[in-house]
Length: 79
Image (cartoon, rainbow, N blue to C red):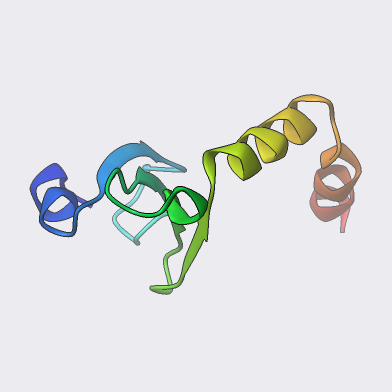
């Protein structure tokens, strides 16, 4: 998503996950004017979105860094 489009929607683009194609990869935005519990917005390539707080994002990132998803990902790549 372009920066100008994200700014029009009141979202500040933070990251694109993949970015190797033009298929609408998942993206992470901050909605600076949103209520605290809905400030983080993650979109997918199907037009859906998840809204969460910065605190919830922190828990998610911490869990990922400590390996909570490692088994899921290793199972998915061997299936």
